[in-house]
Image 1: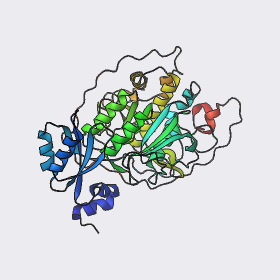
Image 2: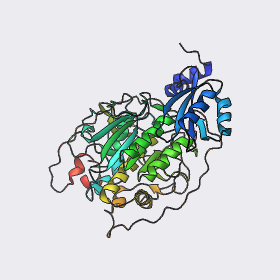
Image 3: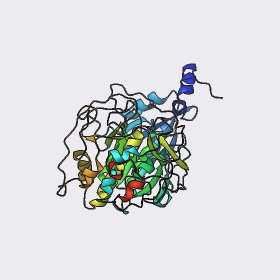
Image 4: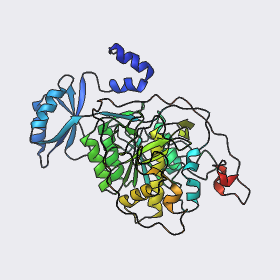
Length: 447
């Protein structure tokens, strides 16, 4: 049994994922990420690494970037030497990010979030397109779930060196829950609906089966998503430490035309979470059924929009469950981005992002908790307007201040504990009611 400080042991009893993160690195070693300046010869790079007497880990998908396995106690010494070496562009600790969900009421079984963002009316205007790919960078997606299986077109595992194409089943369940919110198979007579009716799913496992993963894994997952043509990348995860590696991956995906959507975090503070804080990511806060900020949700002018995040029913492992967190809010925005790409195939990622922002509902807290408001899918796709929406203008710059001191270990959340199987809904036969009433029977149109 590993010997750990008593305070950490007691903390782990209450927050099991924290303990996992604290002991995540192999015993006796820590991981550093090093980005070398180009051009550099392999012999020069190898010579520098060997001069420190450390082992080289994997080559990342970022060019000239490698992981070093450093003995504990030598981290600061080696980082100091690397920072002074002209061959090195940057070096940093390979931090750990985690999922951003919290447990909630296990008896809640209504997809209230879809009604709140007016997705059913939006579906009468557009189903999006089956040519749009949504990458879920997370714990993987259960490829056997009946509400997701036929939508998954690619499965990649970036917790393994080289990010091989590899089928994953998502033992944690978080990635499957997120995928269901963004893109469950809709109108199939089972389970629930996803925001992106016609969008496809790419499963990218960058967190392990406990819901935690190194920044290097996540960076590799983001790049793999962009290289495989994902129009939208969902990041329902985060850590409290900034990272040049992570930001470089975000910027790379943006340069490839992808919209990147990320969770703002669950510490209930005006505190930066990464990668959501970066300029080329859309940071998403969580709201409740009354359009109020969820108590756990991070906030601030660095957060762009809000979306439902309390007691959200979605696919989970082989069944369904309700979870809460900014992890759940994020895929609502991801699904909307996919709908917009499908509706407007010529649009750029900047236009899609601007449309999401400019059509959000300015609910209470807008301008303080988030910049633009809670998303409105119907307004975004134009179904509530008499004339088509014009091409959006440039997004105004929002300046925010991150937390003064970033903790080296990200804030973690307890493992979800409840599983709820929704009651089957009878097939709608009354002609005057929209077809989607079988999924959202509580909507006013369906009464």
